[in-house]
Length: 352
Length: 114
Figure 1 (tube, chains in turn purple, cyan):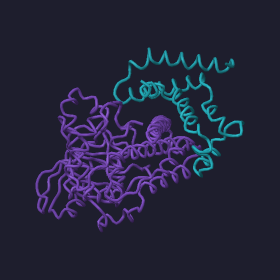
Figure 2 (cartoon, chains in turn yellow, brown):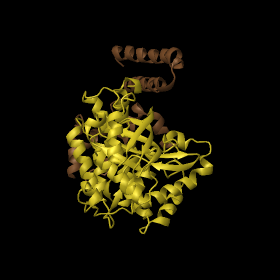
Figure 3 (cartoon, helix red, strand yellow):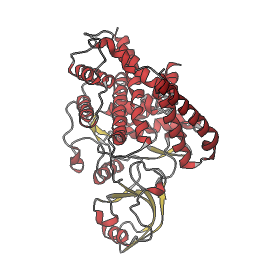
Figure 4 (tube, one colour):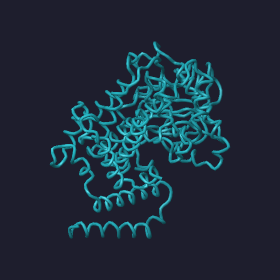
């Protein structure tokens, strides 16, 4: 389905309701929006770039913003917009490189769907383009180290937090909690059984490490979810899966083979070395990465991506949403199963 | 190979060739991406017709009959079947997944085996 075929929420010819709502929200005398432009991408919702002129109040001046909406068929695993906005705001406060949170509403009366407005970040996010940039050798290591440092800043956000109460109680055993969630998704949503994935989950359960620190995990921290301009980081995106967890979960997700976009030799996100990523992290965090435990979390990452791929495929197979892209994504689960089984082989062989 | 699947294979392969020669070059932008997915799907279907049944690799784990994937998955989760009861379990599962990938994405397999 192309962008043009999709029903749009925002009508650029009718911005009065949004302008009035924003003026009240920002304590301004008047807000004038324009130009308004629909941005490409946004697999789940729509992204609109908004020029804004604010008169009066603490945000008086000209702004370059982005409005993001939820799609009608939102992914069930993700937060609602107001929760994502709260995570983003917490990250912004913690000094993480994120677009500035501006305003948010779950009220369908404003533009017809829940949405949030943040600052505009320039650059590209597509993983394939970033790892294949001809200058990656020049900027990759520095970018990787910076992303390690940013992750440590995210992980400085720790429970309890009244503003993040919707995240629920921090898990006592984050690894086992993740495995339980994945098994529940397999049972509740999938018609077919997946013995290889079950083996991986059983292995993960039998080898689950205890966690001595619980932090805010971004939970989708990977190449493809941050923006880069001229080789430098401009923003970390996509906060809809954030939750309390073990800090190594994000490290494993970032380094897992399935998120290197084919640039396998650059083990940190297809852009740089593990050493650079760990160095950046350890330079900021009060709790250094334990390199021995990261391989476990990379297997967890493969399992989780396999489950997500299967759930996407199921959206097609169930007849809910006919889509070749979803169907092919579901078939990708075997790739993660294969990587996980090979990694388990290697770890078991090392045990002797 | 049965006559029907031989015909199916010929249809898929010829459709793919025709698509590549006459339609794909005309596509640009988002349609090119859709076209690549369509070609990929046809290739997968053609390979599936050629390939054996991936679950054959799991035959030794059950009672010798056709493997029941749901029963196997449940037994692995409960621990009834594991490395101890079946020392070649992981090897069999890997062969099964490998066979699925020979159909869905042999390029991926080659990249992992190089």
